[in-house]
Amino acid sequence: MSESATPYPYSPGLEGVPAGVSQISEIDSDRSSLQYRGYDVHDLAEHGSFEETAFLLLHGHLPNQHELTDFNNRLGTEREVPDAVYTALQALPPTTHPMDSIRTAFSVLAAFDPDYTEPATNHEANLRKAERIVAKAGTMVANGHRIRQGLNPIKPNPEHTTSENFLHLMTGTAPDPKTAHLLDASLTLYAEHGFNASTFANRVTVSTLSDLYSGIVTGIGTLRGPLHGGANEEAMRMLLEIGEPSNAQAWIDDALETKKKIMGFGHREYKKGDSRAMYLTKIAKALGIEKGNTKFGEIADILEDTMRERKNIFPNVDFPASYAYYLLDIPIDLYTPIFVVARVSGYCAHAIEQLSNNRLIRPKAIFDGPANLTYVPLADRA
Ligand SMILES: CC(C)(COP(=O)(O)OP(=O)(O)OC[C@H]1O[C@@H](n2cnc3c(N)ncnc32)[C@H](O)[C@@H]1OP(=O)(O)O)[C@@H](O)C(=O)NCCC(=O)NCCS
Image (cartoon, rainbow, N blue to C red; front, side, top):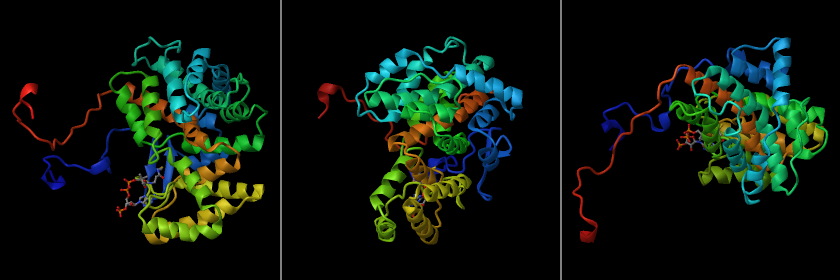
């Protein structure tokens, strides 16, 4: 059936289709801007902390000092996870991608939440669950990384911020303040982004009155793909394949000629550039200069110029995040899980918003298959 022949307005990939009302974040495609609950994401990344952003997303306003201190204390006391989570991760094959590990970890964790039996519509219980989810995500990703290397999990330090906790557990050493600060800014940029595929999938799940954890598991499974969160890992692999700035022009010419998708470029919502990428590019390039490794920034310039001139396509947040994380010595297969550590705050905010005014999300399929066939008994079929 051709699109024009359908009896309903239809937009492939639901492009441009409003799928609900939300007060959590606003993407302005024309101005290439992103606001979380009315605050520009650049201001939040520049002047605030990931914890301030997580509080803003979950509780609806920026915390005052007292509220932030209390929030940080609650996160600090909630960072540890039950041993059963680690036992489950230890049972996975060492080849398991960390995105599958973190998805599994959240499935196990769900049953240990003290509010496990509370109904999905209990707003206060949902907020408590959300804070636990935000607190524990980094612990599970970083200790999951240790387990995959045959190391034992480390106990989180309750004084640590989300990024310090992640780095401490990942490296087994005291977190470097500068690295923690840069990671923190990237977590703020990754925290929330409207009805992207994984957040929408998370809202669909909780709209059945399923629970927050099921929404998180759905979200992580959806984020994993290279057209979504998985792009930051693919972008880094692409940069490593290119290798040197002197190879970049020939590489991108060939890629465009052969109609390859360039990972870390393009966005459904931003056609004039992704403001998060603009912010993170400055950080990533400054980091390259500081570390004496400017080659990824130079390769990036060539890819960006060529994509803009030939395709009018701009980098998205995953492109600068990829080489920023590389320069921070973070293993490539943790890039998308780091996205999870940040984005669970957005998933929870959306799940709570959905559940506070819920209607089952159930769109329509345009049927385009055979109909009214005659059933032939198995014995008579050719
Ligand atoms: C993000 C993305 C899925 C958006 O997809 P979309 O809105 O459905 O847009 P489309 O994939 O239909 O792309 C529209 C056109 O731009 C081209 N395009 C979009 N992104 C491109 C990219 N990264 N590299 C090369 N061409 C790209 C498509 O080939 C298509 O061209 P065509 O009309 O000649 O066929 C897409 O840009 C993409 O695959 N990017 C790479 C993966 C990525 O970085 N994902 C992270 C997003 S935050």
